[in-house]
Image 1 (cartoon, rainbow, N blue to C red):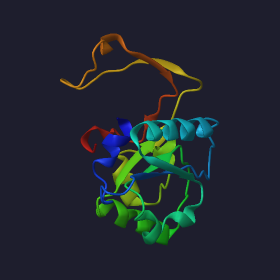
Image 2 (image 1 turned 30 degrees about the vertical axis):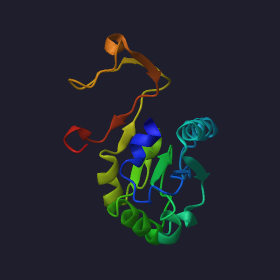
Image 3 (image 1 turned 180 degrees about the vertical axis):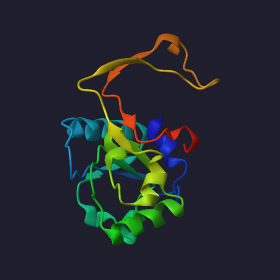
Amino acid sequence: MLLSALLSCGHVPVTETPRVLVFTKTAGWRHESLPTTIAALQRLGEKEGIAVDATEDATEFNTANLARYRAVVFASTTGDVLDDAQQAAMETFVRNGGGFMGIHAAADTEYEWPWYGELVGARFESHPPGLQDSPVRFEAGHALPGADDWQVRDELYNYRSNPRAHV
């Protein structure tokens, strides 16, 4: 369902097997969970009939290659990971209807690229050490059954600005 929802905004003809590109390049902190993240997305894709490719190779961000995909996932990317030409290809991809999903540290990526900052909605500032317990709160009308007391234990982020008005 997660990947299918992401693909609803894609631009590849529906007669082709939908493909998602998972990008995991890091130029800063590298999360140990990256292999698990890729495997989980590939399992989800398999269940939904979606091909999931993973790469750390930024040269794959060119117009011809990105045209193969319905969506791009930045999974715990950090730092400056794309050059100017690669950034332009990514912008064109999204402006032409390609989907985007940022997971976790995607907000800790490309601080000098204003367009990307608008895409992710807010920039990473910091996080407390370790994992924190937190309730999950849903917008009115969007709660899942039985989710009134849903708790998560995760590395929770502080952002440089409140993303509420932008996402």
